[in-house]
Length: 285
Image (spheres, one colour):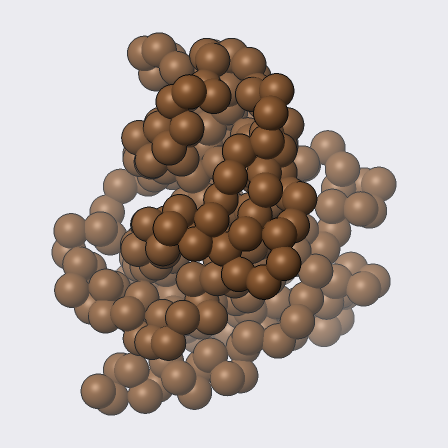
């Protein structure tokens, strides 16, 4: 109960609006809040110290004043020309059809989320160097771990991770026309987190599965997300799925689909939070 009460205080403080993409700003900030509650004292002190250093040299319009800000910083800077070459760091385009290839087949030159996670960890493990670069490594780590747990950030069927799949979204309110990727980035996350008790269920999943879910590394998590995309997302519409080709007609996401997706999303948010905290606790034991 004490842990849940602490998390409620964190969520009230950290869930404020900010520009973002995958999992929506709310999803990324929720992951940060839950992970922060699981940090050991050393890791929390190091995180707080790095965040405090941003006040001396922030990116205009994308200042990092909190761990929640760090969670959305990588999306905030995407429109800035000097950061545009980092767009590929937000996803692993792993095919959803056929045997899963080795990473060089979808991550040329290390331009993918799982490789970006490895680089950020390596940078944080080196205690020397400019604080600005270490803070940016922290921000990338927080964000990319969140991204890689959104299944369509680890999946591709020749449709740009679902961006070319048109969706009729009717899970709540008037029907909307979206694409599949944005439905999983935002609409389904909003639907999931609007359900009574959603945050408490996610926190409980963390408490029940810490030892089982807390290990692994970015590539393991990307492959797990890809399996969800194969076995749940794309498998929902077998009549529309042609390997390597987006369907020509819109697919339907109704309330029944959203209800089936809700526990998947809650689980992925819990896994991302646990794994973020565990990673930072390993860097700063």
